[in-house]
Image (cartoon, rainbow, N blue to C red; front, top):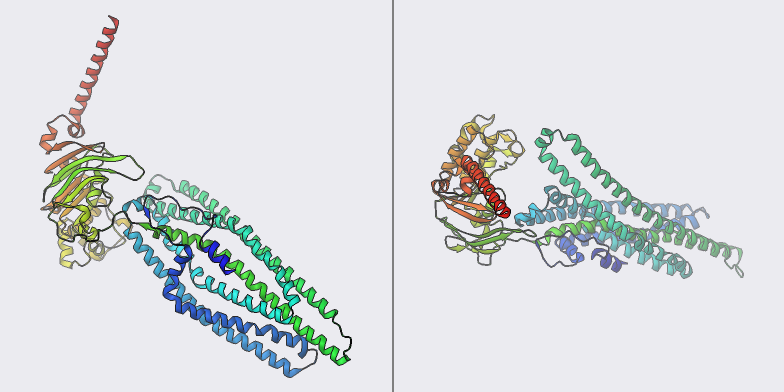
Length: 638
């Protein structure tokens, strides 16, 4: 019985739904049973103590039917008050000892369960933090959170109670079978005759229940992801009066989840009903068999007193056997129930390890370099394509000297942000090489490199917490003087001081209680407090009004001083003073130069930033095409 469960249930079977495809490398995965053992190994001594208590309880419970049979078969018919009281005291003692041991055992199991969940969530959260940016771009935060919180919780019963109760049930069943054969081998065979029906039900229901459990878990993840997305975009939802539309969408998903739960519940209830029916029928058959044996008992050659004693002994024996049969079917039903509990736990285990088995795309080399960088960045023949996507960058070559500001411009989708992602090593280049201070970027330790880099993005993210905590995110060990200095240089100190509690004012999620311009200035202060050598500004002022942009531009000028800076922007005011402007189109650099050089040359840059010239150029091209068409028509006519 135990072998059946460990191989087909824990290790998986053909009924397991396949995990969703991932572009990340997946480590070679051990069996789920080995994964489970790894979870409980640190707590094996506590679990062994729990198992010993459970086996002791099972052994004590074996005496209960014997004492009950003595009361029914001897104490009551013979009006033996001493025997009656002794049996009652024995039964009460068994119950009291059992309750005390059960209480302590429950405490130990809760203790182990809490520690297992804590360590598993810590391990999973730590692992997720190490995964590459592509992982987060391919999954919603709600789905990741559902696996981190929901799927890990589903493993608690499996790693604490379920496995131990499996061993307890097997142990109890073996003892009871031995006792039944000792008391009467014929009745024992009758009792065992119906047990195969219990396990037949496993093969009848397991495959469908496993599939429904997977569907239910996936649907819960989708609902979690949807609610997270809608709550995160509450301003957009309200701005488009889409509240009812979102409610209808969620109701549709909840209805699908409800139908899946109904189907799963129906299957589970049917399984339980089948198992209980088999147990009741088996007990009834044994009762009939015991009754017939007692009624057909041969009393020839016995005196009346001896015959009465024989009948009483038969009543005692078969009363105990009927009780033992009930106890036999209970652990067998418990084993079947354990298998039912393992199904959702197995799905949770599979979904948790589907994440834990992913290997980060970006990892440190064995002897990664940890050193301060000066800020010279070289791209040589760099090409890049996202997984399962077309080529994004082709033959990108340029050099940024320390302290230079490099502007990346071009139409949407030209590859500007991808260049910035490669500099931050969120991805590795597919072709060519990227060097920082003459050393390949892959040779640097990732955290060492990023600790000398700051990014200010278009979508500024401020965490729920105080202003001070958000600024310290850039440098956790910064002093109060450094915090104030960074805010002052970012033109943020003045408005922070005007907040109700100054730097200790709690900001809402995403900094919802302050303006966009103020959020950007705090983001610049957070970047400035690190004193980075490399700075990436990705559309840092695109969402600002003119007044806010002027203040942010002043802060950016301070931030960019003496740092190698990469600026991604569409506004001319942001890139006008850049030392070098790289114009990208369709993943290639099509123009290079300063603002003065590019604005006075025919090309994409002038088309983007000189609309009057672009309009005249477009008219000129239309006239040339019209003239060419007329010439061709005239030539065809002659």
